[in-house]
Image 1 (cartoon, rainbow, N blue to C red):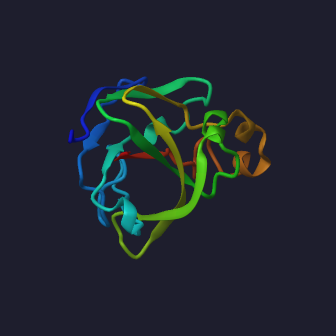
Image 2: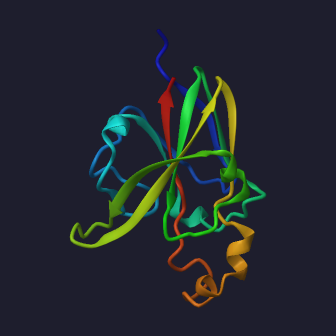
Length: 164
Protein backbone atom coordinates (compact mmCIF):
# COMPACT_ATOMS: atom_id res chain seq x y z
CA UNK A 1 0.00 0.00 0.00
CA UNK A 2 1.57 3.26 -1.15
CA UNK A 3 2.02 6.24 1.14
CA UNK A 4 0.90 9.65 -0.07
CA UNK A 5 3.68 11.65 -1.66
CA UNK A 6 3.40 15.13 -3.12
CA UNK A 7 5.69 16.35 -5.87
CA UNK A 8 6.14 19.47 -7.99
CA UNK A 9 4.46 21.84 -5.54
CA UNK A 10 4.50 25.22 -7.30
CA UNK A 11 2.90 28.48 -6.15
CA UNK A 12 2.11 31.06 -8.84
CA UNK A 13 3.46 33.75 -6.50
CA UNK A 14 6.84 32.03 -6.37
CA UNK A 15 6.56 31.53 -2.60
CA UNK A 16 7.71 28.21 -1.18
CA UNK A 17 4.61 26.53 0.21
CA UNK A 18 5.44 23.72 2.65
CA UNK A 19 4.22 20.12 2.70
CA UNK A 20 3.65 18.81 6.21
CA UNK A 21 3.20 15.05 6.11
CA UNK A 22 0.99 13.36 8.72
CA UNK A 23 1.29 16.25 11.16
CA UNK A 24 -1.87 18.40 11.23
CA UNK A 25 -2.96 19.00 14.81
CA UNK A 26 -3.81 21.67 17.35
CA UNK A 27 -0.89 24.10 17.42
CA UNK A 28 0.18 23.46 13.81
CA UNK A 29 1.17 26.64 11.99
CA UNK A 30 -1.34 27.60 9.26
CA UNK A 31 0.78 29.72 6.90
CA UNK A 32 4.44 30.08 5.94
CA UNK A 33 4.31 33.84 6.54
CA UNK A 34 2.06 34.22 9.61
CA UNK A 35 2.13 32.98 13.20
CA UNK A 36 -1.49 31.78 13.19
CA UNK A 37 -1.96 28.37 14.79
CA UNK A 38 -4.73 25.87 14.19
CA UNK A 39 -6.79 25.31 17.32
CA UNK A 40 -9.70 22.93 16.80
CA UNK A 41 -9.13 20.16 14.21
CA UNK A 42 -11.83 17.50 13.66
CA UNK A 43 -10.60 14.04 14.70
CA UNK A 44 -10.83 12.65 11.16
CA UNK A 45 -8.22 15.20 9.98
CA UNK A 46 -5.75 14.96 12.86
CA UNK A 47 -2.29 13.79 11.80
CA UNK A 48 -3.15 14.22 8.12
CA UNK A 49 -0.95 15.89 5.51
CA UNK A 50 -1.44 19.60 4.89
CA UNK A 51 0.12 22.31 2.79
CA UNK A 52 1.12 25.58 4.44
CA UNK A 53 0.13 28.28 1.98
CA UNK A 54 1.11 31.97 2.20
CA UNK A 55 -1.24 34.40 3.91
CA UNK A 56 0.01 37.08 1.51
CA UNK A 57 -1.39 35.11 -1.46
CA UNK A 58 -4.95 35.85 -0.31
CA UNK A 59 -5.58 38.41 -3.07
CA UNK A 60 -4.89 36.12 -6.06
CA UNK A 61 -7.96 36.28 -8.31
CA UNK A 62 -10.24 33.23 -8.39
CA UNK A 63 -9.73 32.95 -12.18
CA UNK A 64 -5.95 32.60 -11.82
CA UNK A 65 -3.93 29.57 -10.81
CA UNK A 66 -2.80 29.90 -7.20
CA UNK A 67 -0.80 26.69 -6.92
CA UNK A 68 -0.48 23.15 -8.18
CA UNK A 69 1.01 19.86 -7.07
CA UNK A 70 1.08 16.20 -8.04
CA UNK A 71 0.10 13.17 -5.97
CA UNK A 72 0.98 9.53 -6.43
CA UNK A 73 -2.33 8.14 -5.08
CA UNK A 74 -6.02 9.16 -5.20
CA UNK A 75 -6.80 11.76 -2.52
CA UNK A 76 -9.51 13.89 -1.03
CA UNK A 77 -8.58 17.57 -0.97
CA UNK A 78 -10.04 19.60 1.89
CA UNK A 79 -10.04 23.38 1.46
CA UNK A 80 -10.06 25.31 4.75
CA UNK A 81 -11.98 28.50 3.88
CA UNK A 82 -12.77 31.39 6.25
CA UNK A 83 -16.43 31.63 7.30
CA UNK A 84 -16.25 35.42 7.38
CA UNK A 85 -15.79 35.41 3.59
CA UNK A 86 -19.38 35.04 2.44
CA UNK A 87 -18.65 34.68 -1.29
CA UNK A 88 -16.79 31.56 -2.45
CA UNK A 89 -14.37 31.58 -5.38
CA UNK A 90 -16.09 30.05 -8.42
CA UNK A 91 -13.75 27.04 -8.54
CA UNK A 92 -14.67 26.13 -4.94
CA UNK A 93 -18.36 25.85 -5.83
CA UNK A 94 -17.53 22.40 -7.29
CA UNK A 95 -16.52 21.16 -3.83
CA UNK A 96 -18.72 19.57 -1.16
CA UNK A 97 -19.36 21.65 1.97
CA UNK A 98 -18.68 19.06 4.69
CA UNK A 99 -20.30 21.23 7.41
CA UNK A 100 -17.21 20.54 9.54
CA UNK A 101 -15.20 23.41 11.03
CA UNK A 102 -11.62 24.23 11.94
CA UNK A 103 -10.59 27.15 14.15
CA UNK A 104 -7.32 29.00 14.50
CA UNK A 105 -5.62 31.37 16.89
CA UNK A 106 -2.71 33.72 16.40
CA UNK A 107 0.50 33.51 18.45
CA UNK A 108 -1.43 34.88 21.45
CA UNK A 109 -3.56 31.82 22.24
CA UNK A 110 -6.22 33.88 24.04
CA UNK A 111 -7.04 35.71 20.78
CA UNK A 112 -9.30 33.60 18.54
CA UNK A 113 -8.75 34.69 14.95
CA UNK A 114 -11.08 32.66 12.84
CA UNK A 115 -13.55 29.93 12.06
CA UNK A 116 -13.15 28.02 8.81
CA UNK A 117 -15.43 25.71 6.86
CA UNK A 118 -14.16 22.56 5.17
CA UNK A 119 -14.88 21.89 1.51
CA UNK A 120 -13.88 18.55 0.00
CA UNK A 121 -13.34 17.05 -3.43
CA UNK A 122 -11.92 13.72 -4.59
CA UNK A 123 -9.08 13.59 -7.11
CA UNK A 124 -7.29 10.76 -8.86
CA UNK A 125 -3.50 10.53 -8.68
CA UNK A 126 -1.81 13.17 -10.81
CA UNK A 127 -1.66 16.94 -11.10
CA UNK A 128 -4.09 19.12 -9.13
CA UNK A 129 -4.55 22.84 -9.81
CA UNK A 130 -6.11 25.16 -7.24
CA UNK A 131 -7.40 28.61 -8.09
CA UNK A 132 -6.98 31.95 -6.41
CA UNK A 133 -8.60 32.91 -3.15
CA UNK A 134 -10.28 36.20 -4.11
CA UNK A 135 -13.82 35.88 -5.45
CA UNK A 136 -14.33 38.79 -7.86
CA UNK A 137 -17.77 39.48 -6.36
CA UNK A 138 -16.04 40.27 -3.05
CA UNK A 139 -14.67 43.41 -4.68
CA UNK A 140 -18.27 44.65 -5.04
CA UNK A 141 -19.19 43.87 -1.43
CA UNK A 142 -19.48 47.11 0.57
CA UNK A 143 -18.59 45.42 3.86
CA UNK A 144 -15.40 44.13 2.24
CA UNK A 145 -14.61 47.61 0.85
CA UNK A 146 -15.26 49.26 4.23
CA UNK A 147 -12.96 46.90 6.17
CA UNK A 148 -9.85 48.99 5.42
CA UNK A 149 -7.10 48.71 2.84
CA UNK A 150 -7.83 46.05 0.21
CA UNK A 151 -7.27 42.63 1.76
CA UNK A 152 -7.52 43.70 5.39
CA UNK A 153 -9.43 41.10 7.39
CA UNK A 154 -9.23 38.69 4.46
CA UNK A 155 -7.81 35.17 4.82
CA UNK A 156 -6.00 32.82 2.48
CA UNK A 157 -7.28 29.26 2.38
CA UNK A 158 -5.37 26.22 3.58
CA UNK A 159 -5.27 22.70 2.12
CA UNK A 160 -5.45 19.28 3.77
CA UNK A 161 -4.80 16.10 1.78
CA UNK A 162 -6.17 12.68 2.72
CA UNK A 163 -5.31 9.48 0.89
CA UNK A 164 -8.41 7.61 -0.31
